Image 1 (cartoon, rainbow, N blue to C red):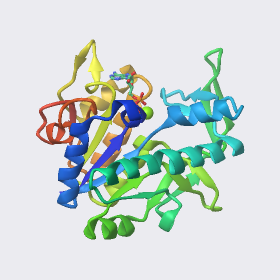
Image 2 (tube, helix red, strand yellow; image 1 turned 90 degrees about the vertical axis):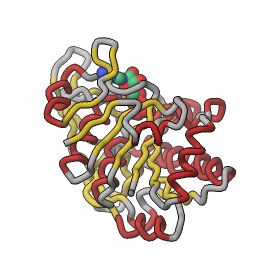
Image 3 (tube, helix red, strand yellow; image 1 turned 135 degrees about the vertical axis):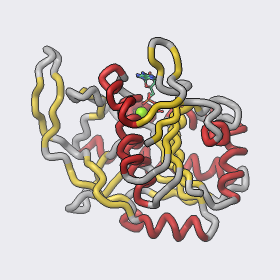
Image 4 (cartoon, protein in one colour; image 1 turned 180 degrees about the vertical axis):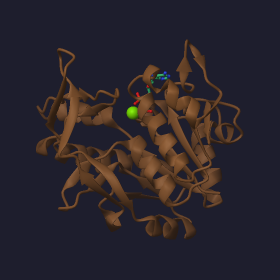
Amino acid sequence: MKIVVKIGGDLIKEDSINKSLIEDFKEYAKNKELIIVHGGGDRVTEIATKLGKEQKFVISPEGFKSRYTDKETVEIYTMVMAGEINKKIVRLLQSFGINAIGLSGFDGALLRAKRKERIVIIDEKGRKRAIDGGYTGKIISVNSGLILLLMEKGYVPVISPVAMGEAFEPLNVDGDRTAGAIAKSINANILIYLTDVKGILMNGEVIRKININDVEKLLEKIGPGMSTKVHAAIDAIKGGVEKAIITSGFIEKPITKAIKEEEGTVIYL
Ligand code: ADP
Ligand code: MG
C-alpha cells in the first residue's frame, strides 16, 4: 500500500509533537508505504515579518486563500519551507529511527509547475479583479520514479511544497495540492490530510463519509483551508487514488485510525 500523508503547519511545532503520530509514521515507514508532504505557511509569514517583509493574502472567487508571492517572498518561502521546516521534520523523524529524506520540488526535478500568469481575486470591495500571479504555480509533473526509488530503498520522502517553473524559477505551490498531485502520480492508495480539526465540519458536526459528487456540492459552504483539501482530494480520487481522509493530527494514532475509517472524513469515489 502507498500512503501519502500531508501534515499541516500546526502539527510540527516543537511543543505540540504528537508521539503517537510518530509511532504511526514508524509503522508505515517500516513497510515502505509512507510519503510525507508538509505545509508551514504560518512559519513563512512569521519569518517574513521578522525580515521586514509584510505578507499579503488574497482570496479567489472560489474561496481559496493564497499568499501573494512576489520575488522576495518566494525566496523567503523557499528558505523556510525547503530549509527550516523540511529539515526540522527530517531531524525529528531521524531521531525516532525513521530514515527520512527531505526533498524540495527542485531536487531531482521532483515537482515541475506552470507559473500562474494572472490570478483572479476578490478585492476589498468584493469585486473580482485579475492581478499578476507572481511566483505561484500549478503542478504539471511529478518525478514519481524518484519517489518510488527512495521508498523501495527504505527511505521516507519528506517533500516541501516548492516547485520549479518552466524557466527553472522557484514557485510557491499549495501543500494540499502538492500532496494530491504526488498521490496521483505514484498511484497511491490513500491520501491523508492531517490537520487541526476533526474533519470536514458541517453545522458543527464532522461528516464521516461522503462521495466526491456529494462533497463537490458542499464546496461553497466549506471555508478556506478546508476547501483546498477537498478540491485536491476530489482531483486525486478522479486520478485513481482510492480514498482521501481528512482528520486531526492531534489524536491517538491518526494514520491508523484514518485508514480504518474510525476518525475524520472519508472521501471516496
Ligand atoms: P492546514 O495547516 O492543515 O492546511 P488550514 O488552516 O489550512 O490547516 O486548514 C484547516 C482549517 O480549515 C480549519 O482549522 C478550519 O479553520 C478551516 N475550515 C474552513 N471551513 C471548514 C469546514 N467546513 N470544516 C472544517 N474546517 C474548516
Ligand atoms: Mg492549509
